[in-house]
Amino acid sequence: MDVLNLKKLGEAIPQLYRYETIARANDHTFTLVRVKDRTLDFHSHPESDEVFFIVSGSMQLEFRDKIVRLNEGEMCVVPKGVEHRPVCTEEVLCLLIKKAGTLTPDNTGGTYRDDE
Image 1 (cartoon, helix red, strand yellow):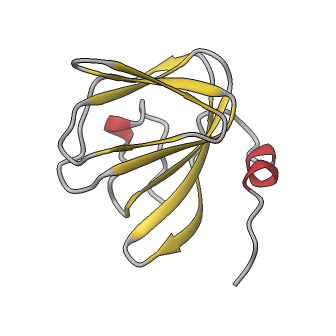
Image 2: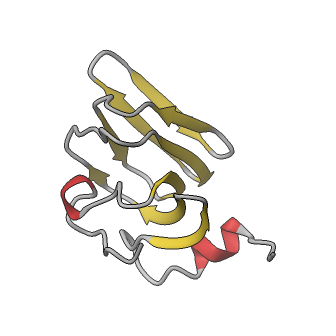
Image 3: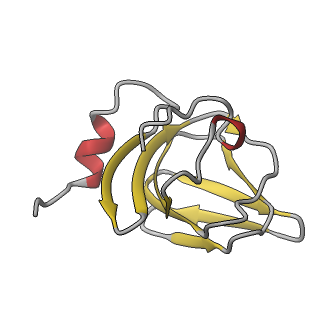
């Protein structure tokens, strides 16, 4: 049982758009990613909710009917099956929590490595 400092782990990620799985709990993974100047396509995850927790920076989550702004220390749970797209104009460090196997190159802009 280790203590994880999310900001320090994020600072150690060597490049933008590199997804780093930092922990696992039951069938869920905790993945950090640093992103800037990226808007993903609308997509949904039919088998898993997805949690976005903002470690530093800010971003938007666009839904078909609204836009949610997330700032440092805030989180949003996107229910499974709900179409959404992350919009990151400034650099953001985000912790993603979801069932293992949820993220793919198709729903992460082609940059996700399948290391789950």
